[in-house]
Length: 278
Length: 278
Image 1: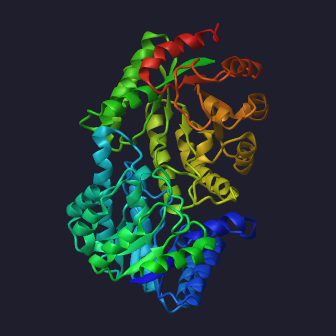
Image 2 (image 1 turned 60 degrees about the horizontal axis):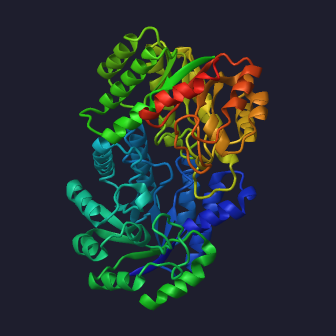
Image 3 (image 1 turned 120 degrees about the vertical axis):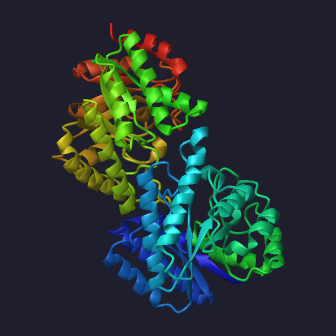
């Protein structure tokens, strides 16, 4: 397995601390991505995951700047697609379609930087009508099928991530199992987020038993409480990383383990903490 | 001014009931109940909420138009959809989807002969980004595009102030900034009493500054700043006496819409508010 870091901490921290230094959100995205890449290089990591949110890379000019930055580094880059406001599962057809389109465009960026993995989110099941809650799941399935069809010639592994409880969709082991059963395709994979699963009281032994062949990306995230997802330094929360690494080893998981924090300044402490399990 | 009733209470009842074969039946049934109550209780105006936005075929639209036409004495307004819609999103694809959705709803508003059309700005929720100006700029950009295309429907389009947790169009300062950025556009203001209260807005100052833009008022009570539960009027902490005094000061002649969370609280709320009309 390959330890790596996410650019999330740099985006959040720079967005708060250096807020007046950026004349555009593209500057924030590029600055945070570069810092993440440089940190990874300096620490000898072989992979890093860049988040393309704020979603400033969807114009040709901006995209090229991002592509050029990524291609100036030689190690493996994964992409985490935009997720704020995105709603593949939205009951609003236009929002669902727009989200599909954004992920198609993101997949094409992956191809240009030779990214191996693209992580996507399902959105939030906002409209709590019992009779149409299933409608969110149907919309999600429809949207994912459309995305997979549109990207079938793009050489990237698309991974759907499990969600925290406040997203109200793709929550626990049963819902994830059902989702992948219904999709029933060989070109959709799974990004397992440790904190999201914990907030939903997920049976991770069952989850790994049933879905381990599909897990192609892991987000290592700690957490204090079930109702939020603050991404603190690893080791400072309640996640049982010992149990998680037992499963990772049991199923001989060989791919990326991405440390995803809300503050880049917590990276050193988190890397040191997680070394004991590697 | 004219007393009006929103269909939101009946939509919420429908959500809990959750026994609709078609999602359009939720809209039709809620609208009919709202129009019926208004007719029986001499309420002049109904504001019909079109969320979920399922009137997406000519057949569905005709059903809705037919229903509205069967209540010729009631003046209709429309509240556009808002779940998942985000005119202030940092994501251009999602802003465009929201604009398109509001345009489609504007066409339906025109078809039922309504004039007042209320929209929401969306939510500003990007990774704790400190510089709020990016959202106001995105919103202003969306509204300018929307207003250009919406002209043909000859509506009075009103954007609503938001409750604290939404993060955009909260206080007077931000509302003034937004209206300055869209100066020259025919966009008006729907003032929500509860949303203002959650942001500690000075009602006198707000009306002093924006009274010439206010074309719609949502009368909503509230208990706590962090939520917006739409209880029966008179049960919460909103000072309706001050509100009616201010509306009288500025000779407000538009609709005041009761937006109640549950239909069982509607009769009590209508009784409570009558004293301010005498």
